[in-house]
Amino acid sequence: MPTIRTITRWAATVFIFLACAAVFMLAPGGGQSEAEVREFEISARQYAYDPPRIVVNRGDEVRIRLASGDVVHGFFMEGHDLDAFIYPGRLLFNLRRTSQNGSYVPAEEMVFRAERCGKYRYRCSVTCGTLHPFMQGEMIVEPNHPYRAGMGGAAGILLAGLFLMVTAPREPSRPGAWRLDLVRAVPGLGWLLRRRWFQFAFMLPGLGFLVLFAIAGFWGSPIGNRNIAITFVWILWWFLLITVLLPFGARIWCMACPFPFFGEWLQRRRLIGVRADARTMWKKFRKWPAKLSNIWLQNVLFLGLCTFSAVLVTRPVTTAAVLLGLVLAATVLAVIYRQRSFCNYICPVSGFLSLYAMAAVVEVRPRDADACRSCRSKACLAGGENGWGCPWAQNPGRLARNNYCGMCMECVKACPNGNMTVNLRPFCADVHIKGTDEAWKALIMVGVALVYSVTLLGTWGTVKSWANISEVGDWSGFLIYAGIIWCGALAVLPGIWAAACGLGRLLAGSKRVAVKTLFRRYTFLLVPLGLTAWAAFSIPLMMVNWSYIQATASDPLGWGWDLLGTAGQAWQPLWPQTMVYVQLPLLLIGLAFALKRGYAIALTLWGERRPAVLSLIPPAVVCTAIVMSFITLFAG
Ligand SMILES: [Cu+2]
View 1: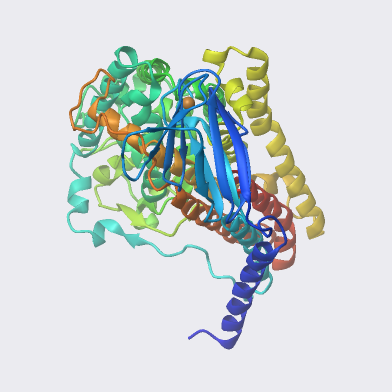
View 2: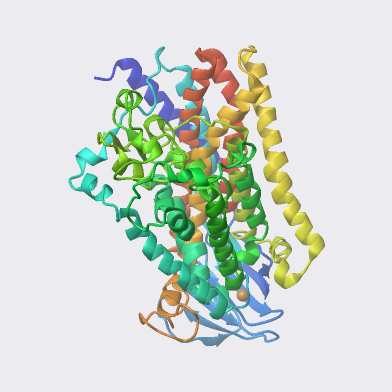
C-alpha cells in the first residue's frame, strides 16, 4: 500500500510537470491575431526551398505560388492533401490531391486553409538528384501547440525529476534490480540457443543481403532512392537497428552481422561445428595490442564515416565500397589477430552498438556467479565441447555489462553446467561507463545526432551543399561542415560537459569525487537520451522514405523490374503529421531515464543525497538543453 507521503509526493510531481507544460502552452506568442489571406512565392532549387520556412496563423487562407530554378521538383505539403510538380522556368505548375491519387491539373496557385496547429513540412516529391530525399521546407501554423508542449514537457521533467530526487525516501531503492530468466520462461528457447546452427542461420541471410547490396551498389541505379543498397542499409536497417534491435535485443545485430563471416570461417575452419582443439588453436594468432584495446579507433572511424555521410547515404557505389571494405578489413584482421578483434576494436558500427546496448532490456549473464567462480572448465571463456570460447574475448561468467557481448550464444552452448542464460531486465540497467573512450562515444553520438538532424532533416540548403561534397565540390564549405562535426563532437560538447561537471562539483561543495570521474560516470545520462534522440531522428527517415523502400524491394537494382508489384507506385510519406507525437514522447522518456539513472549514479559516487543532487543539476540542465534542441529541430 502506498503511504500518504508517497501519494502526495507523486501528486506534487505530476502537478509540477503539468504546470511547466501549461506555462509554455499559455505563454503569449504567435497565432492570436485575426485570420487573413497570406500569399507566398516559394522557389525550389537543389536541395532546398526559398523561403525554407513560412509562418502562418491558424485560420489563415494560404496561397502559394511555386517556381523552380533548376530542374523539375515536387512540392508535397504534409497534412494538406496537396502535391505539386514544378517545371523550371514556368509560372504554371501541376497540382493534384494526394488522397484521390488522381492526375495532375495545371495550376497557378495552391490555396488552402491552415486549420491545424503545428509544423508541416513541404517536401520534394520528384527525384531531383542525390540529396532529393532530404529536400524540404516547413510551414508553421501558430500557435505551435506540439512544440510548446514538448518544450514545457522537457522543462517539466527536469523540475519534477529534481523534486523527486530531493524528496526521495532515505533509502533509495536499487534501480533496475529485477531480472526474468528468459530461457526458463520461454519454452524451447534454451534448446534453440544451444543449437550449433543457431548463429549460422542468421548470418547466412545477412550474407545474402550483403552480396545483393554489393551487386546493387556497383551495377544498380546510381540514384540513391532507386537502389536497394541505399534504401535497405541506410533507411530500413538503420531504423530497425536503433528503434528495435538495440533497445530490445542489445547487440543481437552482431549475432547476425555478415562482416566477420569469412574471417571467422578462416580462423575456425568450421562453419557450424566446434573443433576438438578449440581451446588451444588460438596460440598461432596474435593478441590485439594492449594500447589499442579501447574504442578510440571506432570513435575516429565512425566520425570519418559521418563526415562523408551525405555521400555515403546517397551514392550506392560508395555504400557498396564501404561495406566490402569492412568485410575485407574484418577478414584480414581475423587472419592475424585472435577472435573478433575487428568487431571489438575497429568496426565503426560496433562502437555505438556497445554504448547503446547498455540500455537494452535483455542481457546474457550467468545464472549463479558463484558457480562460475568455482568452475574449473571455464569453457565459456576458453572453449569446450559444445561451444567456442567467447569470440569477443569476454569472461562470460563475470559479465556485468552488455557493452562487449555480441549475443552469439557460444557461452550458452559451451557452459557444461547450463549456467549461462538470457535475461529480460529493465531499460538502462547497465549504468557504468568505464573509460574515457566510452565517455567520448556517448558525447560523439549526441553531437552527430544533432548535426544529422540539422543536415538531413533540416531546411538549410547551405548546410546540405556543404555536406554534399561529391556533387557540389564546395571544399571550403565542406571543411566548415567537417570542422563542426569533429570539433563539436570531440571538443565543444565534451568541453560543455566538463564545465557542467566542474560546476556540479562546486555546487556540491565537496572534493570527494574528482571532476574526471563525474565527467565519465555522468556521460551515462547521454545513453538513454542519445538512443531516444536517434530513434526520434530515424522515424521521419523511415516514414518519409517508406515508398522508396517498397519500390526498391520490388526493383532492387533500379533496372525496371517489378517483382512485388510495388515498383511504380507514387511517392507518399507515411502518416507524416503523426511523427511528432512519437518523437516528442520518445525524447521526453529519454530525458526522464537520463535523470533517473543519473540520480542513482550520483548517489553511488557521493554516498549521500545533498552533494549527489547538487552535483547533478548542471549536467541535468545540459541534457534538458540538448533535448530542447532536438524538440526545436523536430517540432519548432
Ligand atoms: Cu527536388
